[in-house]
Length: 349
Image (cartoon, rainbow, N blue to C red; front, side, top):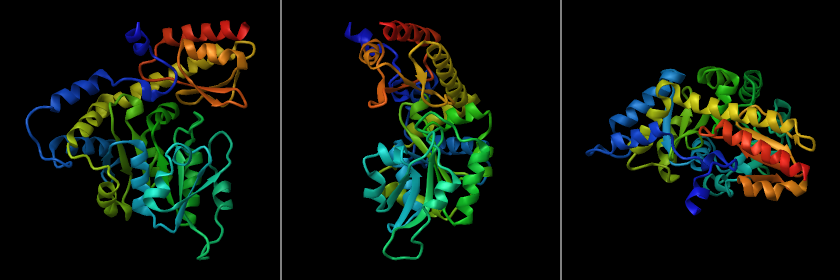
């Protein structure tokens, strides 16, 4: 019985899903013989080429262990300790990384209240004060999440507008792409258009939430001075894998034949299906636009605990009775439909 419960797919997080079979097969394939460590191996070189095929020959890629570490080292390579990052109050960098940026990079986060999880050029301009005053941290970067922590997606126009304000004020433009694949699938665009053409200086490319066992990548879509610092920031930031081939091989599999987009599109489709089913239930309201693989819903308080016993999920905002349901690459129609039926039953009690 315990095994059956553990094997059940849930809506708690796309981190809770297992690894895609093709990723596991890639790990087994490279687990043969000896190759040089720390990325000086053919698998890492192949994965880097796969990224450049998506982004262009000027792209630079640095593999890391996890998303928090990837965010921190990317920003640490670009900023000095007296500088600050402008971000949304909901940003994972601000809320769910236990002060990692402040501790290891020494800078400060300027977190701002935003609508639907999105930072705007007006938000950024409003945070640009105290420039040149040694009594104040100096805003030097903006950081956004794509897709956002509320499941929304920046359009290409919104990204370009942020890129314009970043260039106007000499700000480093960082994008937390833990769910970048979901955003690309939602927009139906390529990475070059989303990143290089909008002015993003560096982004993390999420693998763990999209079918990998572990590993993320820091990607610079085009040349930037921070690229020269990244090898040292990655090592001092404890993100340099000695057996790099086991991270790189997963990205090789994920990027081969568009598996990264296929996985993300599947998760997004399941989120849309779930939102469509529950939105029709009296007493349920969708809290934020469903644009990627997350559904945020307002439920009657009495229904939350019984539904968590059906399939695990998190309460996002207890005071507002907002819950979060995340769909994964392996979420099925049956998972969605059976859970939506349960929602209807519990809400009606």
